[in-house]
Length: 422
Ligand code: ADP
Ligand code: ASP
Ligand code: MG
Image (tube, rainbow, N blue to C red; front, side, top):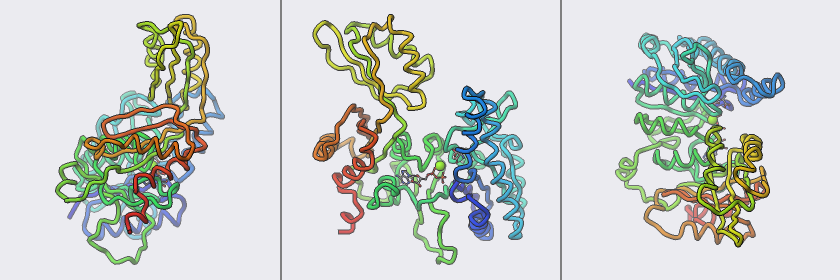
């Protein structure tokens, strides 16, 4: 017998028929003798719909009330799944975030889980009940409902798995694993059997939304065994020992598996960045600090930064990116600081995308960035900014060229599925 957490995303929970399919998958695990907790998302599109209602009600909405509204989508699906399981003859009950409770900090709309009281949950599971938990939601110390940021149900699932000491955390979604890049963009993307926590963390943080970044860092920290797999599987398929999805493993484990390590693990695209250029900033100590100080104070994350070499007259241009949602706020802040910084003009561009190639193999191989730049240049794709880490190279390009760039790079690194089959 194992103790497992199963998480089902929005597409898997969209409508009665799909919820019945999910209930059957859950029932099979329980019938196999496992103790099961299920974490669910709202139906696909529901959270977006609720976010829009908040915006319409008040463009400068109070994040605490926003959380009350957007957390409701998961309340609906958790109740519906419990009802559907009961209809199949399973004992099941829902546990809302405040009922467990799932304790979080009070950063509404992007709260962090601080702890989960799991005693009652474990007792109910031990008594043969399937526990159905709405993802995405928690409770602050001030006794208010919080949510964990978009895509947060993945993090709920991993946190529950850590809290109850689960043997596995299975993340069921609408693709059958983690691919070398978004399989909806590149038809030749290849499914990865294994990916390391470190690689998955980097891929998620640069835009592979198949897992929320925080869920990966939590799984890594707590040693939770995470698998990504599809809920759209054939009910009658024979059970096999093959891993149906992608398993996230530690570096040591991967080496033990004796896999031939690829240079590049994956490619991700992120269209949620925006670029700002401050022209003719005085080229003297402290100038850059007066730009980024106010942004940090306003909790705006700056990602890529380029300071061009000083031109004559001791001036330089400073280019950087922020999350698209923070562009207006950043621009307003910097305009208020125009005198103090001493720049000439702000140029902004929300139509940019960041394309990143990720791979642990990069640590020991030169030439990854050069291949990237050459492949993009051959297609006439202009690079506006570059940033690198030990296992990642990112470039900023025109948003309209996103899909083309991802495809071109996928081929350039020899990752296309047909290349492998050959
Ligand atoms: P869920 O609702 O189940 O949480 P998401 O939409 O959040 O599902 O995440 C699944 C989606 O992630 C897929 O449909 C796919 O388009 C996208 N995706 C992006 N990058 C990848 C990748 N490298 N591998 C697999 N899926 C990816
Ligand atoms: N429903 C939430 C969202 O759409 C959380 C999730 O699905 O993970 O972001
Ligand atoms: Mg998701």
